[in-house]
Length: 226
Ligand code: NI
Ligand code: MN
Image (cartoon, rainbow, N blue to C red):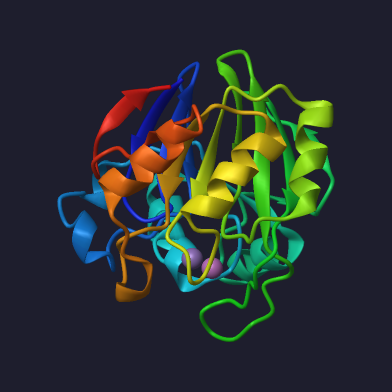
């Protein structure tokens, strides 16, 4: 599957020509100033939770692309109230068959208040099943036992985990999470953007290697095949 990293927890996957963007936070991210959001194509924008560092560019990109916004009911309603009506609400444990594949909204242990203080429901992650492969984007989360439910339903090819610690899992927890969801390939996100989440990338990669796992850390703007 073709995956493009846009910095922080934002990435896009291309599934049979459909462009699915996750958690766009690009224009406020100094590390991502090489990205012009006007060039980003999106058929869907998936949002894991309501925090600014996951929703900052949703409105701009959705208006430009007319992408369908997918998130929990509260976050989708918040964007609806801003005039963005092309959307699909979900809630935890539910799946929906989109035109590129099946998506389940799953639990995350975190918080989800929207930038203006509105209630952003509960935070989540997404399990995506498609002809091009299956993956799990954990969103912002602590390591949690509910992750063990995911491989009961889906054989994953890879996972996207936050690894920056402080606000989410760190490296140690992400290694255990890989075991819980039964993957050996992880793309790391949610690191280095702010002072609280700076990591040593080489040390992180080595820690994964010691556990026979591959940690993928693409450059911002880089497209890789996973
Ligand atoms: Ni967050
Ligand atoms: Mn975050």
